Every structure is written in structure tokens, then in C-alpha cells.
Image (cartoon, rainbow, N blue to C red; front, top):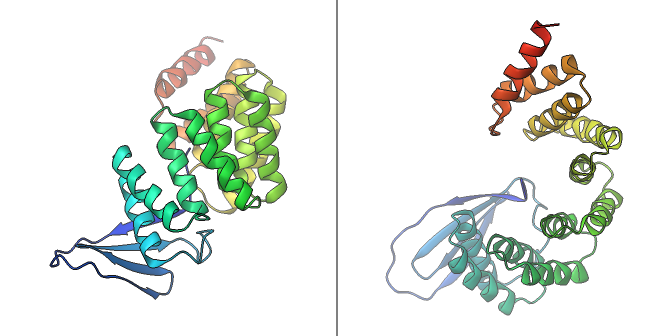
Amino acid sequence: MKKLFLCVLLAVFLFSNAICVFSQSQGNQSTYVTGDEVITITTLEPDDMVTQTASDRAMAAYVTGSRLMNQNRLLDAERYLLEAIELYPEFVDALDHLGIVYRRLNRFAEAEQMYLRSISINNSNRVPFINLAVVYRIQGRADEAFDLYKRVIEINPNDPEGYYGTGELHFSAKNFDLSLQFFDKAMELYAAIRSPYISHVHYYKGMIYYELKNYEEALKHLEEAQRLRLNIEGLNRTINEIRRILANR
């Protein structure tokens, strides 16, 4: 999952063994204290988080669990995210992150359960649809993944993720013409928001043109992906291969 909602900035200070929990907000920053840790969470936009009404204790557990998830300390993250959900059962952001934890642990049935529960609480939140589509793709359930990306597009036609995911699925199925259509739309939308993920679209478009033996277009897009510092194994090798093909024509 690329992805998604927040940038977590952490500041850790030592306190006595106080059990206090408090929060304070300034702009789109919120600070939570739980036990001996102070955590500052900064959202990219004020409404980045779906859940706005969780208790301070639930929010602190969520932020800690999310930090541990980002550090790939998955079992520790599970414990805190479960605590956040226990404290606030409709905490969809915690459910979505717990789904990511379970997916990384290859506990796909539990990941699916978390995402479906999140969707049942808020079916206009695109995040669980995107993440559940990833689970289904891992499991080879392409048709169900297609349906989920379609739903993402319905929720927000200006969200590039639904088009990007659909393009990937068509690419895997070697439906290159359809794949290009969806990647073109994803590229347009990524460009509009200046997203770095546009480099991934350049890579896929380059590989599609490579498969179609349109080597000039393939080289143009793969070199752009390289210029944008996309780190994908084999990218430089493919570029050099195309250059040799074009030089020998």
C-alpha cells in the first residue's frame, strides 16, 4: 500500500510514572501524552483522519500503534491499535491501520475482517477499499479487487488511487490498452496534486510500451521514472536494453 493519511512526528520525553493523558491542538497538530511518552501527530490536511471524536486515550493508543506500524514493529503495533479500537469501537483509522498490520503479518483473513468492519462503519472512506483491494490482489482475487477500485473512483472521481490500482490490475492481466487508459488518468490526477507517485505511473507506462515494442515511448517514460529517482529493480537494465535496441535499428 504506497500510501496514505498522515505524517507522524514523534517527540519522546521522560516523565515520572504519571498515568495522565491529555491532548492539545494547534493548527493541524495535536499532542498526546500517555505514560512517559509525548507524541505529536501532524496531519497533511485538517480532515485527513476520518475519526474525529475518539477519546484522548484511544487517540494516544492509535498514534503509538501507528508509529510502531511504521517501524514495522507489528506485534507491538497490534497491541496498541487493538487498545484504541477497544476504547472506541468505531475508530475506523485504527481499524484501517490494524488491517495493514495483519496484511504485513500475512494474516489476510484478519486484515479483511478489519477492512470490512471499517467499511461497515463508514462506506465513504476510500482507505479500507484501497487496502482491501491489495489483500485481494495478493490472494489472486482480481475481480473483487476491480470492484473495490471501482468503488474508490465512485467515492471520489478525482482520487488517482482508484485509477492507478485498476491500471495495475489490467497490466497484470496484459490488457495493455485498458491499462494505459487508467494510467493516463492516474497520471493526470497525480500531476495535479504534484504527487511523487507519478514516477510509478511513468514506470508502468514505460513497461507497457516496452511490451508493445514501442521502444521510443517506453524509453521516454522509463527515463522519466529514473529521473524521478524511482527505485525499482531492473529499471536501469531495461533502459539500457531499449537503448541498445534503438541503436541497432
